[in-house]
Length: 226
Image (cartoon, rainbow, N blue to C red; front, side):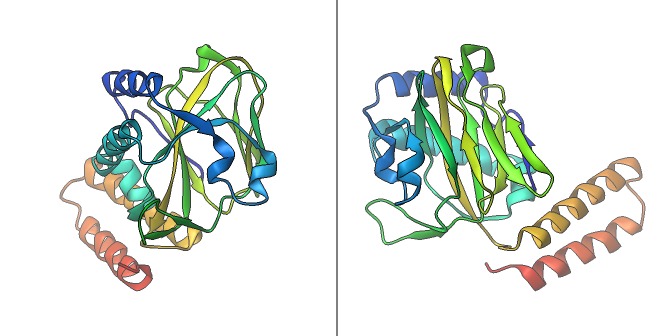
């Protein structure tokens, strides 16, 4: 499931994030790449654990917890602390699949990467190129979203970032360990949750809402690890 989650951050939050990133220490992005990914990765990244990364990461995670679309689609158990990357002209990230397990820096905690997320911090008109391209069974999907919007997709997906040819592309990337690891099961639960909301809004007293909600929670109980 490839899902556009709009307005995760407000304009004020994006502006604060941009200000923090202006003062941040940038390092070679290959420092957090796997062995094969490092060969394809050419970007800059804010050093993990810096005050700027922690402050903006907390803003993002708090915003996610308040976003019903994200919560319904991801059913998050753990969210990896957000990372922040920068692509300048000539920088790109070739085709790769994200590591299955991510170790949280300076912590024994490991996160299984069921879902990958890119939260855009630069407006599309600020740069040329830099599209996130995600491959699935229906082909290649090119993604370039407004600042504050996010794309969520299975971490099993082959994906890449095309070369930036003008301007600077800023984004936050992170991973989610879901309570439901199987993408097919998670997608069915999301579709069912959206349908329940539509029926409930159209006919609030419809007895079918209770029956559908019961089915949702019984399926979640069957599939979830929490």
